Length: 366
Ligand code: NAD
Image 1 (spheres, rainbow, N blue to C red):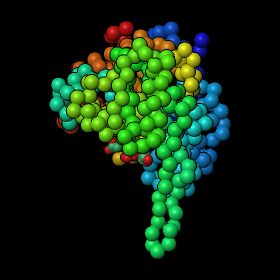
Image 2: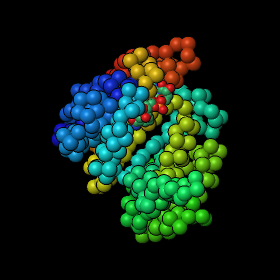
Image 3: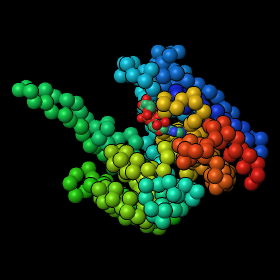
Image 4: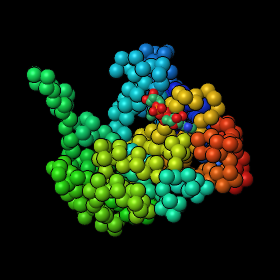
């Protein structure tokens, strides 16, 4: 079966890092029984320059047909003055919304070669492997009513509404429990049930679906503020953390920084699944378009390459190939090869050289 991959390189360093991902896909096409057809299209500022919109309807049609979408990054100062609905980030939001990508997965994995570069002590983060599952399409970022009201007398009121329904909590909890079963079988559910009714509902509904369907998985509940503290105190106590959109936004950034550079962090945004294979999925590095280094061959392509590795696992059911790619990345790092962002600044290799080194390592170990 041929898998359809839509590649949306986007802006800034997006096209540079996606060029390296393309080489990796090509390697799997040539060396494994993995067959993927890749198609390229525009998103973000690049799309705005051509189509006057940050994602066109024809790109959305391709996105809906694709088995997986790999995105580089969007945005940059060139488009700072573009109207709100056409700004580069709007393309990304439309993809998430129209494909109903409600589950955002952010792994925080520490490669042993980089364990000295975290702000935390080596023993705290060495061999760390945790996964944050954030609800992405509900909660306070979307709840109504919202807005800013003028109350007169120079006084205004800002309003956002935190709202979750049972079905939204159940579907994200289900993703977390099913992923935990394939990992270390533990889920930590995080909310603020002590001060928020929506948090109490979250707690009760996660507990209910756990008792009904996932009692084989270890479940703990942790208040979100404590979860933030525990993440920097002893992150290895976690396996999978499931949480809402707002707390997930914050906790996933905290977890990300445990392991060092932005250039190393992949992510996945997933829709509904059938037998644990996600039918619509967007994979992208956590970093942005890095306009400060765009065009200078300094971008680290590993976050994007690891995002492709996540697609092997979650869209294409190829755990072994995903492990092989992660091993190749790890070996390259163990050999001391570094892009500038993860180097001590004295000796580093280019974006292209990092991509080539990973291909070389895939040849060595396969
Ligand atoms: P950024 O992630 O682009 O860059 C932050 C810093 O990290 C910069 O110094 C950059 O050089 C460095 N960096 C990022 N990725 C790197 C990589 N792969 N290799 C080496 N160094 C890397 O964040 P920013 O500067 O706040 O935003 C720049 C633009 O990107 C803005 O327009 C912003 O809106 C957009 N953005 C897009 C996304 C996305 O596409 N998902 C995410 C965040 C920011």
